[in-house]
Image 1 (cartoon, one colour):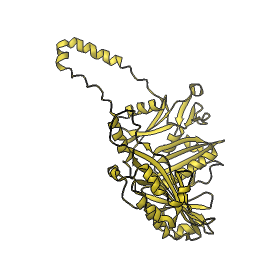
Image 2: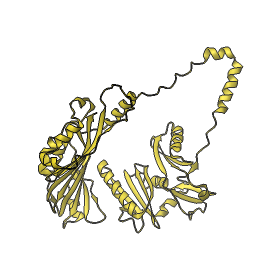
Image 3: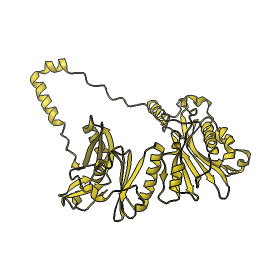
Length: 428
């Protein structure tokens, strides 16, 4: 967290950057605000509304630094600014000597409020740009400063001085001790009389039920499979086949790599090979947009293929899954059997790396007890070339893909190279 020097328009006011932000419904905001304040150990908060949600920022400033000062949230003033609040996504970078104040706003809500070094701010900027590409959000980058790089629009720090009342940070109210209303209720009940108490008092609530291990495990299992887990044997070859039909050169730009998730669209990266930004923008079809031209002048990013829908790995198929050792034996081809690392299997540029599996929920020690087999989860990574797609197609049905990267290698071992990462599931 960083507190600025007194503002030129109000010597008693200071801006604060680096708050923790959360969104919660307007209805019941008081209880949610108290819950998040307790989670963050906060003593101060700022709050504003966006539609049906309250956007709250929480902080615990040092009293010695803020004594006698009026505090305002820099991120809140940015989010409420006329040039920011109407945009689908905005990234604001403001330099203060060797600090970069980074504020990321999506549809009027603060997503990130950070105080970073110039190097770390550049890395976060790239991460946010990639996130917006995956989510198909039109991102506008604004800011001012010598170390922030190119921006779409200038946005000086003086823009935060226009609305002097916006983003006021307040102290959290002290909660009233429950003994006061309880004592008043007790006096009233005594006046009514013991008979009325016995006649109309509801029975005491039942004791709180402590979840059993089986209930906790069922919840962990439901959460694990609540998101799609596409079959690696189906999705991997389909993605490779999609990129195999692409032209590698387009209007003076060479395809470099593409990154795909389990759903949505891939994000493609091109490298300059004599072309221009304007030329590519003119030639690119609507299916590749939005385009993002990098500040280095050498790369650009586009929307890629849609990730195809395939069958999923589900817990209901667990009876057909291989055991962990059988999985290793299946993936370990004869040339790989000489490997001295049993969990890292390599042959002809095709590398399989399996991390040991872990239980979804650690089981309690129960000697001499019998119970149903539990599901274990492990991570895997496979690197290879497009001509080895048939090996992906033979992967067992207990392996799912999380991310898939396709890269066009033009040096050393040339060809279409892929890196697939995901999870595998076995019964203990």
